[in-house]
Image (tube, rainbow, N blue to C red):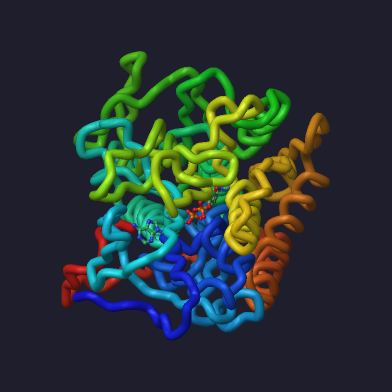
Length: 435
Ligand SMILES: Cc1cc2nc3c(=O)[nH]c(=O)nc-3n(C[C@H](O)[C@H](O)[C@H](O)COP(=O)(O)OP(=O)(O)OC[C@H]3O[C@@H](n4cnc5c(N)ncnc54)[C@H](O)[C@@H]3O)c2cc1C
């Protein structure tokens, strides 16, 4: 079961768990003449989470926002990096090795860049019943289920069943919840009247539920207020100050005792760091299951182990609860750690340069915060599109996404409404469930 990635030289072995924004940018920044770099990822592609909601709402295909590692590692900056498919379950800090379901991989230095997964806050069995957006597979599943409800509602005449099928509840009023609710509002407003003659759009309810008293809490209050208004224009019902308690037998129960009957709950309410079984040290992750690091992204209490991106937690005066879990933080940490590992001097402390944050709520509507500046509407939407297009990997992906957006803009149609369900057999025990 044991194997070693190519170590034909005296280069030190750097193993990176996760080829997301943090891991891939580190691989770009690191000097491959000094380091023998291996990225381990459970998927054979790098993907772009900010656009998962567009896959879930039939606006884009998965292949438009994903990029195979095998191709990426041929590119100039990443060239020389090894890629291994595998789900890392175990890390032995003493023996200096990580284990996937396929092999054991030794390291000299280890970088944990595995990001986060859904947090269901201990609600029993919730993960079995709600749809999520933390991976491209989950986004495809969510898309299939939304389309399934529309097709089944087009068939049934039973009013109670129609109401249940046509009620969509999105839980969590952060950027992901706002974006998917907005996209579903567009489906209701523009697509259903044209393509589902058996459904009256007033029968469709898209409900966004948020536990606090405003949307987009990580952004400015004006962004939250503008998002609320924009969702209203898209016929999305927003219910604030309400937390979901249970979801049982097709009924969601909230903290205030109210209930909603629905077959479709999209859960975007929280994240927690990916977990590993560890040996060889008592050091464990801190709050949010994130590994506590110093300003050089060294994991506190461990030697030759680093954490970057969403799974790391660097507490500073400016960010007492750690940096926000954003793509830019992950990218910048990857770059800084690359520099420090290359020089070996650890002379460059990580400092987050806030490039702003943004969210979109359907066509022509977005909110942008840049420093103290806030703007919304069409201009914000253009900025949102440019930033996301530029950040996508690969010219093909950029071109296809742009073309899709132009076509959808003029046709008011999310044209990729294909229910592509995976065939069940033959089963593969080493495929992780639901990732
Ligand atoms: C739906 C959604 C929308 C978002 N929108 C925005 C946005 O608009 N703007 C923004 O700045 N940020 C956004 N974010 C957050 C942003 O995507 C993250 O901050 C960023 O992806 C963090 O990068 P990372 O490299 O730490 O983790 P990730 O990008 O999550 O990468 C982690 C990688 O590790 C792999 N992995 C995980 N566990 C294992 C394991 N055990 N073994 C092997 N491989 C593993 C995963 O497959 C993945 O490739 C969004 C996130 C989501 C989910």
